Amino acid sequence: MPSPKQLIYFYIAENGIISKAELLAHFEMTSSTMTRLLEEMVLERLILASGFGPSSGGRRPILYETNPEYGYFFGLEISRFYSTLGFFDVRMNPKSLTRWRMDEDMTPERVVDHVASSMRAILRDHRIDSSQVIGVGVGAVGPLDRERGIIVKPLYFPSQGWVNVPICRMLEERTGFTAHLENGANAALVGEQWAMRQSKPMHMMYVHAGVGLRSAIISSGLIVHGSKDMEGAIGQMIIQTDGPRLNEGGNFGALEAFVSVQALEKHAQAQAKMGRSGWLGEINFPPDRVRYDYLLQQLRGNNGHVEELFQKSASYLGIGLANMINMLHPEIVILGGALINSYDKFYETAIEIARNNIYYYPEYEPIFSKGDLREDAVATGAALSVWKAMRIE
Image: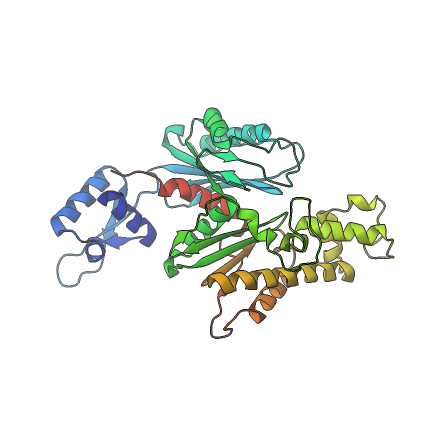
């Protein structure tokens, strides 16, 4: 059960600068109790008395806000293409964000080494003592064992060793900071919800389309955790019963076989093997080595065949989105990932197809968005998960 101080603190944090009268209107407690708690929180440096508000006839009210220097958080995204380390104050202002490519050398041990050295450099650059760091949140590709802080067995990592990785224990041993694990899609959605907090969104859906497909749901303001942490399950949604499958463990006709970096690469490789003239330009390497980066290069060079490939993938994503929207009825649908950001028409096609297949459209239509935080959403949400777990007595 959160303490009264904790409830007051997070209410101030979510609303910005606020007066005691506004707090009393929200919390059922006496004026003297509220005054005492606010005074204690100011003395503890949890909050700051930041000036006076306008008078309504008597004394001008004191205004309160959180103290950005009370503590600091790291947020770490571990993904298949890129990983990100963010450093935040308690207002979730990003003081540093660094990103690196995940290649075949980026084993779990190398990632932890890189993160630990980056943390030391960030603290040194900002002249902040490590004792002021409250913790590090990790948003990672699933499946996960969140309670034990383990990345279980994610697919498609370019390096070896990403099986049953005790990532929280490894980080804690190398950095001395408490670590908390959340799946990356959930972290991204929590981050975006925070960025949109002024509009108080209560029902949100997030879909990440990249190397794989990942999703997250917020219902009544809270992240929905299933009995199993399988953020990639959206990729196994069957949209064509006699369709292909991406890998041996997947469903036939699953969404990931049409909407993923892997799917686009496989299709392009097949076309190149058939020797279709000009389909991928003049390649001087084996068809099996056609990769997503090369497809992007052809896409930006106005290769019509590659553009059609991306357009078809976007259409399938739109069908998948419509299926989820028809079940969950979110207010806001946020789309992210490498495919969404590949070019504007991919995003536009996906949401057009989704709208055309939403039941009750146009009476019911969710807001579609690429989000406010975009590629920084996972690192921000991971840091937020530690901030929200902070105990205030």
